[in-house]
Length: 481
Image (cartoon, rainbow, N blue to C red):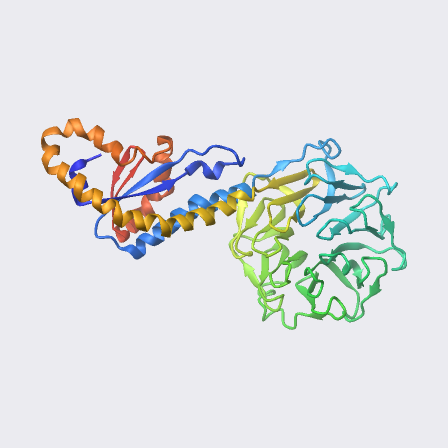
């Protein structure tokens, strides 16, 4: 480090943990370094933007990396044999989970998907297509295609025992079901049929006639209280209900809503937040569409690049965290209510047919058609620690320490030492003075080169010049800008 420049520059340290994005375990140690910014004629507005960017990369990106740390279930009941999984559901805390497969049985888990048990109360195999459960996992409903089967089954003991429904008449090609948080209100859809609703936890079902003719329904979702509901089918058709499924109305003008701007998407699954405000629907060989006003208006997301064979989606109770998958593609995640999406390159390509997510998004399960079950667990401490500790420490300690200690130390020690000792004792004091700046902070020098590359020299030097940053010192490496 060149001490001759210290007397005319102020050095600011910023923590950087480049390998945090590779962290897959909550107790894994991190190798951290400090970025030292040499500042002259500081543009504080631009500098604040730079530091916000570094904060995002340091704290937010590691959380995203943890969300997408998917591992294949090793339960002997479902592994290693590939199964034609169709749907998965979980309780609000993620502990209880139920998955169904085509031409197979119902499988349940009581330890967040680590171990699975085949349900024995239903003897025969069926082409199960979808499953839903209440927030406590007690009430569950599973539906089948009509070859063979075609019935609705309900459980009131967390999936241990199931009862076949006979109130809807003959078999139907059921493709989806949704229920309220307490499981009382339920809505089931069948391809080439009507919408059916229940207000007694699936004991009795009523056929809806407000949608007119029969439809090729493909997805349905409802709010926690069951008041807000959305059902989709075919090429861009979206129906909504605000009275718990009693009456349904189609989006009046799909062209104006931006759904069918080029051609109408072939809808698959739909999900919504607990209050029904935020909604996301998957367009097969198309795009993801999101709504922030309970389905009144829709916006096509283009952050995913080209159109994809989108199929399944799940979201947290507040709708902030969302996970989606495409047939023959990656798992994608969003932490801003579907505005921007990031591909999880570690998940691998697969036919992602279903996702389930706990209320706080810390427990997630994905299923692959002709594949296995995948699990992702995000420690609650990680996202909590970042916003709590970092913002609190920044206004409380950093601003106080900067004017109190740094300015006092700089004119007292560095300027005095520079003119007096540098010319005569430069070789002697350079090694001593260098540790006085980084040694107390640097956790590991190995991250230095990665930091400079990741920061791209702070937006290819232009950002650095705008902020007033004139030099960067990272873990015994210095670059002049």
